[in-house]
Length: 191
Image (tube, rainbow, N blue to C red; front, side, top):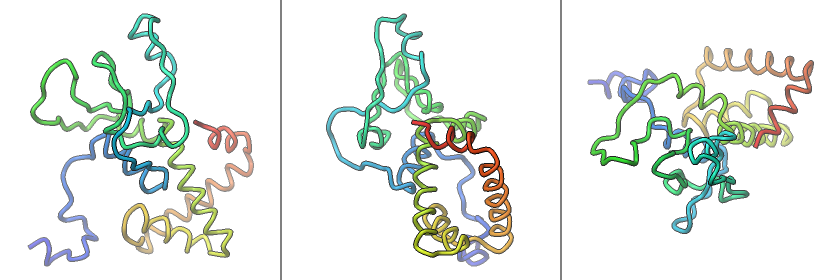
């Protein structure tokens, strides 16, 4: 019945009722931004972690240095972690000290905080923005660049209401960063 009512899935009538798991969020962000290194096998990659997390949990005995280059963007299944400390961006992961049969689902606000503040997410956002800039330098209009990005991220085009809202936000953000170049530099040099 929902397929007949919403064949193009515009109303999201058939969408799941839960949020994506944190590892899915990271892998999708890396994929759509073009950063994902999909090499199979090999040693674990060390994703970014907040400063001092390892020192605290290991009482200063161990240090943690994130992987550099393409290794940083390997799929999350290759992320290095210790039993006592999962990477903080995996906020909904199972505890490694016990066996877990079913992955727990979460509706924690940490989803939003991770998307706004985590280094990998900021780097993926910057790479996605670079794709948009590349479109604009090829003489595409901002609307055409937006279409390219939304197809890449959402696998669909925006409707007129959505497009108007995004374009308003784009012009507002552009005005802010042109007036506050130090904010732009700080945002674009994370990672």
